[in-house]
Image 1 (tube, rainbow, N blue to C red):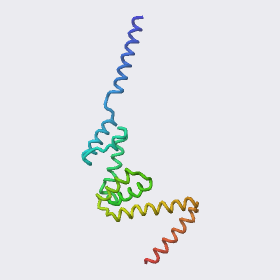
Image 2: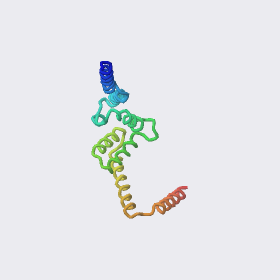
Image 3: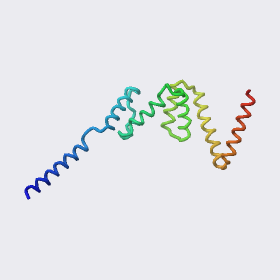
Image 4: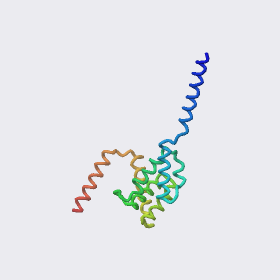
Length: 159
């Protein structure tokens, strides 16, 4: 009886230690989140609240995506083009946060007021025709054929 009480007590102690060790050590995602926050601080000068809304397991991936594409000067698109594209999409979503951010980022990357206006106008034109084409249920295969024909004619004229 004494031996079985000791076994039960030992099992309870081991189980308790197991629970404590499962919840207290630093996890890998905590370390990667800490590294990401340090890099955000170093890159941007602060850590905006938008990053703090993410769970720790997501911050490193989210920052890697932004830094690898949006902030990367070695991509196929320059910063101004990327930010004008962001503004066009933001205008359509619509997202007031994104509109403000991408407008200011486009300006920072050299976009003029006229380029910003044209970006928004292009977004509106695309949205307009998308509404018409989708709402009218225009046949996609026919649309593609007609588009290819138009581009072929334009190309032929330019040669």
